[in-house]
Image (cartoon, rainbow, N blue to C red; front, side, top):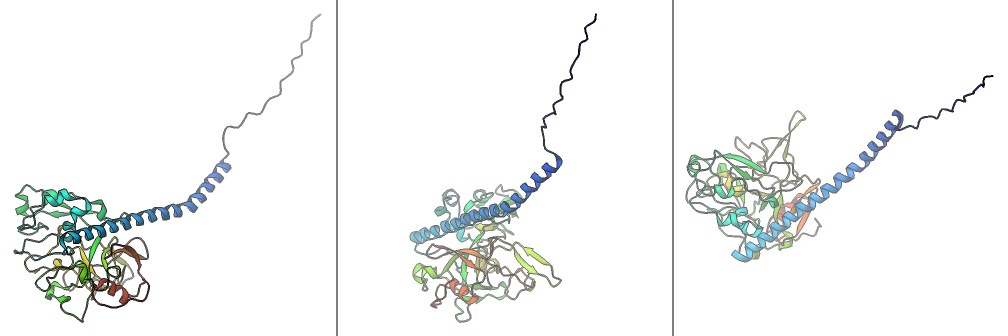
Length: 358
């Protein structure tokens, strides 16, 4: 007799799922996208706040350096001084404060006579080794997208000293305040023919055959807390074209031969760049945008067939620009400031009482 064996089937267990469904994955991605969209502006805002604070610190250090320079030499550094030869273009005010911004090595390697800091034409730049490729971080705003250096073709006389075909020179985002245009006193605003207008009523001014008095704290008659000393140029100049489009130009006061280190000019300042190299005046408002390349203020790439070069104080921080005042304090000034007040802040001796907060 056979024994029948019965075999019972075991219940089949459902396999445990090891991933997400497509719908769940899409939902998670959508949530992450929303969170990123919400957080990104906050992150960008925090980064810009940090960059703006760093820019403010750069200006603070420049203000301190200028005070130390004044303590040492009993005057502010000139934007440029007359040279004895046309192609002996002098050093800028930024070169003169190098020992006070921890750049003593470059300063001590410099010579100030018989040299062309722009290395142009037939001039010889005897300082090329110390300044070729030199980048001082404190001279550039971290928010600026503009290049920090420029390449200049080297003069034959400089190449004879062993220099390469091109020299890399730093461009600063910070320029000295030369003053404002004044019709009332021709000693402080001078028309130099086709070389343009120069202003001498600010704190960082050019010394030339028209004006040769170094600026001292005692000559800041409006008070150091009411006078601009150094301002920011960290954005391009915008030109609004007639067809509705816009053109942008990197027209910083240091974006020319020699960069931050050249004061331009030459014998008796017979070249126009002596009046705007690494300095600027308050001819127009902060973040000014011209409607023509031939701006009557000399703003823009051309001005009656030559570079305008009267540059604008501007920034990428939005809504204004940062300045260091003659007392060493740093202030963000709105682009909506009344222009008359803004211009008077650049004049060290107008003796006007400013009752309005700026």
